[in-house]
Image 1 (cartoon, rainbow, N blue to C red):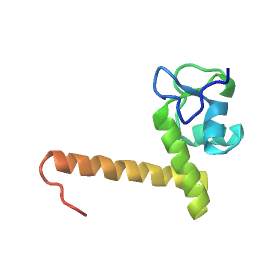
Image 2 (image 1 turned 135 degrees about the horizontal axis):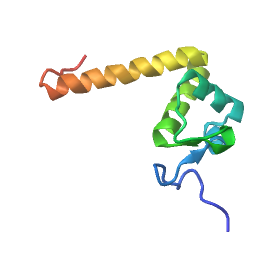
Image 3 (image 1 turned 120 degrees about the horizontal axis):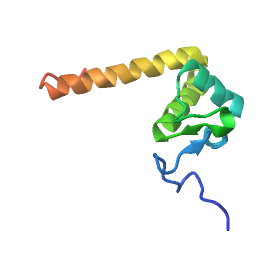
Image 4 (image 1 turned 90 degrees about the vertical axis):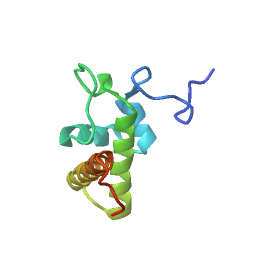
Length: 107
């Protein structure tokens, strides 16, 4: 019987992705995933000696897919993608903080 597809596999702490699976889900090579980790776009979960032991969760998959989209759609390098993703995260955090204090409005 074939294994579960990425479309139906729930992600999270119970079903982490390995580096090769993450690369496949993003249409990339494992060396690209290694670069994402080195730059800090995604983070290895738990102790691991090398890429074959790395585990990632759904938030990592989303950040990797976002980095891939930035590369493809805008031609940015991974360093720039890391900066863009961090800035997007910070804007969302600040908007949520403003909204929680009743100060949020459409920007």
